[in-house]
Length: 201
Image (cartoon, rainbow, N blue to C red; front, side, top):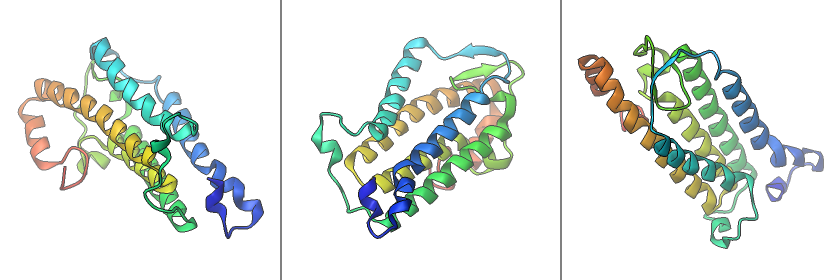
């Protein structure tokens, strides 16, 4: 992203080159560190389901971190990036990742990276879960949108769609299981709170 450093002092180019990588790496390190202290799994998604959604997710990640994929159309610009669009992207990405961290901290030991039902699973409706039913997905998708704004290329849009597809698969199964476990309580919650976008979706 060095070309977006036009007009910046030469010593600031490293910000454009590495800031997004640093934000996402710190986020993933945090996520991995928090993955251990969770409740025992009682029910888990089928292996094939996990493989499909993981392939979508990893492909979406790869589009941002590999800029020599032999598909030239991925690198077509849908607008000319600037310092302003870059910092808008940074702000949106940071906001999304921090929202996901808030949700992860708030859900505590009920969290899982796979679709699961935990022993003693609780229906959390406070904190970010008052705003959306799946705030971790909302936060990460917002982070991807911010990254796509900064990149300004078709690959960013494709990555958003891949992440959305993976998360939609996951939340659809989670919704079904949560309705089975919590019944009318979850039905009432889903009527009151949207899944991903407050008041919209």
